[in-house]
Image (cartoon, rainbow, N blue to C red; front, top):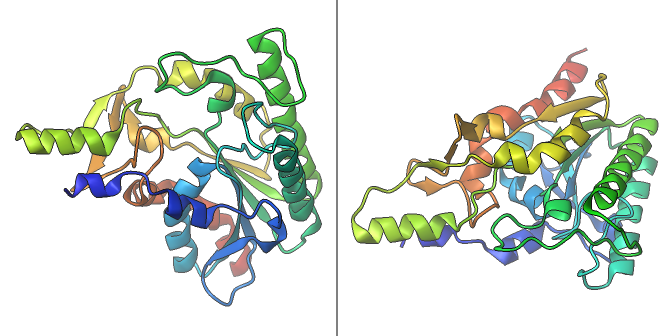
Length: 278
C-alpha cells in the first residue's frame, strides 16, 4: 500500500548518519565538485530533513557536510545513560565540534535535533522516563534541564567564537502516533484519509527548549528556522500533502515532509547567495 511505503527506513537514516570512529569522513551532499561551506549536525531528525537540504543545496550550487549519530543531540557533553558506548559518543560529539571549529571552509553550521526528547522523553511513550545523562546524577528534572541548556550554549558559543554562522532549526512537531499506519488503515477502511490532525500539546512540550534556543542571542551570526510555522496552524498539524505522508512514523519527517519545508529551509542558503553576489 502506498502509505505503508513511507514507514521509517533505517538504512536511509543510517546512510546519512556519520561514522562514529571517523567523523572526519563526513558525507558531502549537494552540488558535486563544490567545496562545502555548510555543515549539518544533528540526530535522526536532522537526517530526516536531508532530502530538503540536499535539493536546495543542489539548486543553489552549494554543498554541505553531514555530521551526526542517531539518538545523539548535536551538543558536546550530552549523552543519555541508556546509550551504548557513551564514552565513544561523547568523543564523537567533541570531535565534530573540534572539526567544525578548525575548518575555515565551513562558514555555516546547521543544527537540528529532536531537541526536547533528551529532557522530556518520547511523547509517544505512555510513561516518560526522567532525563538521565551519562556521567551525571541529577536530583531533579530541572537540574538535568539546566545542564542540557548550559551544554547547548557552550556548543553554540564555541562555534560563534570560531566565526561560524549558525542556523538553528527548531523542533519539528511530533504527531504521537505512526502517520503511515493511520493513513493506510483509513484508506483500507474506505474512510476519509486525514490530511491534518489535532496537535494541541506542541508548545507545552517544547516550551523549555524553545526558550533555550531563543536565549542564544540575536545577531547576524544566528538565524532561526521554525518548522512548526509551516506545519502547524491553529493546533492543526499537517500530516499529508497530496498523496504523500509528511512523516515516516510518529515524529520523523518523510522525504516529502522535508521538501514541504523547502520554503523555510531555503533561508539556509540565502545569506550565501548574497555573499557570492557581492
